[in-house]
Length: 213
Image (cartoon, rainbow, N blue to C red; front, side, top):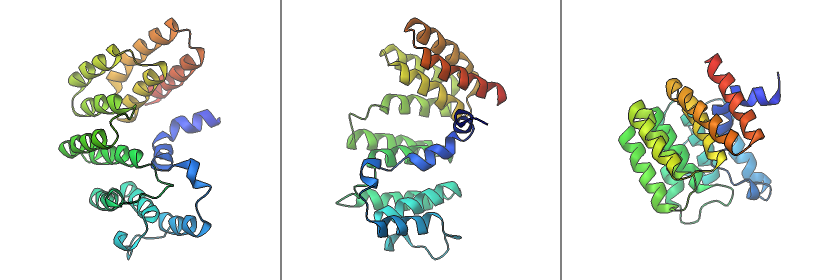
């Protein structure tokens, strides 16, 4: 199986592995801190782990474990501790931690909380480039019809080709198959107009993923 195929099939796991880390600073993180982070992330059990007694880097490992096990409360608790820190750990990408929080609470159908997390992200990082897409996808999670309208407003703002691809990818990730069918066709038209051959390959891969769903 190809590397591209692996990424297609394991995209949620890829997001979990990647979001929240400032990789430019990761290589400079002391080995002891990395090992402490990994001990939490790969521990046999979360029993006995108290995020209050952990470093922020360890807390993010704890939060990731909590999200994967479906413990939304534990995830939110650990995340709030990280965000309350006066000096965020340099190896953490705080804006992405907000993004992951939106996703985790939305997965739990706690949409009012997800809206609050969006507002907090917007206040903390008003220039975060993916904010409009995040907001539109959150609407689509809740209602396909309103989601379609939100996406129409998004693309009317003349988004770039990469955002078109991300839009389709996100619709697939959240299980909005019918919306994805519509927006794959629209994305193909856009990428054909811009003669973006690489982008069209990405869309075809997403189309194949949709057919297998």
